[in-house]
View 1 (cartoon, rainbow, N blue to C red):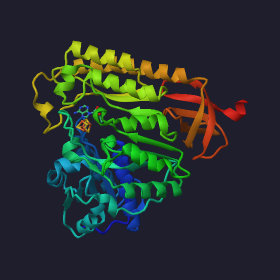
View 2 (view 1 turned 90 degrees about the vertical axis):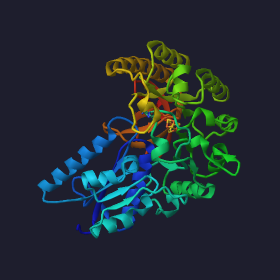
View 3 (view 1 turned 30 degrees about the vertical axis):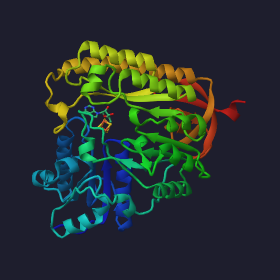
View 4 (view 1 turned 90 degrees about the horizontal axis):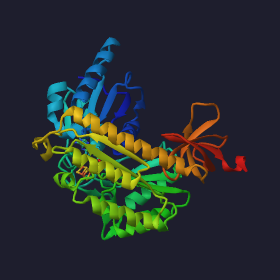
Length: 437
Ligand code: 5AD
Ligand code: SF4
């Protein structure tokens, strides 16, 4: 039996939705009267895990081992809770293998306080239910809010891309209710947020009684004090005309779109069950650029999907050339247990994947640098988010989601007019527009 914890730490891995969930779990623990501590010192450590790629599961087990060893050196035995997608996928197996105290899935973490109490009474506590009644209604109000805040509006995925675990770990597509979202957005702005990023695995599939994400964005647009709206991640097939038009119409909606394509070859897209083609994706981008010519595009790519030939990969490279992404993420295919692709023939050799990833990343870096260079000389607003390393330096984001650093005595949370002066591969140097005039 372990005493009820007095301090807690939450370590989040993976996507922005996990960061959001991790912050909510921290709020839950704080609402129970626990104080935050470093993971190496806390009585309760929550590992908020990711299952999307690599040997994520093994990483969780080695993290648990390390935590225990370090704590044992100090004569402590912290309570360990495994949350997130590994918890959902592995369930009771984690309790058996690693003897952790709590296992809680991504749809059940509002029950964390009760699970911790059960664990304190000596019982291993597991909850990987996916109730229809979503967790959001059970979460306490948020206290610490950064200038740029996340707000989860949608969860889960019905797309079943053949490589992906998300439909299994996060469950079916569910939209959070309109009024709950609007209330949370207002509360975030009251607490200091100037920018809100709406989150969802398929955020643009959000819907409620015939209303779509663009209607929700139009409603949030009315919130005084909210300066910027973003959303991520979108699926090409859920990119409605309404949402495209919103990019031309709603000024607060930032000119940035993360729209994963994964691959450039129709044969591979089909095997991935992506339900869009190379051509339909490119035509979609044309329609978006028609309403918002300066939009910065971002994407996700997988190299080495089973059966991918050099000719298929060349089509990915040529798609990259055709689009000119402002930034993008690229990964080596990683078989996920239980997904259809994991048992497909023709798995691609590791060294071939390494080589393709390198070539793809070289092309993406080239385009990112070119995008940044093309913005030099523009004046735009930058939302200041944090201090930089140099004295007087602040770092914020441009409308196109570039990191911009500048010297200024403005405050974190301010929106300042900045001239983009110099482009780097990953960031921009800016000068205050007034200072420059
Ligand atoms: N292997 C490699 N990358 C993957 N992704 C999802 N599943 C896998 C996998 N099994 C990537 C996709 C997705 C991003 C979040 O992670 O590119 O868009
Ligand atoms: Fe995974 Fe595909 Fe759903 Fe994205 S759309 S979460 S890649 S199944």
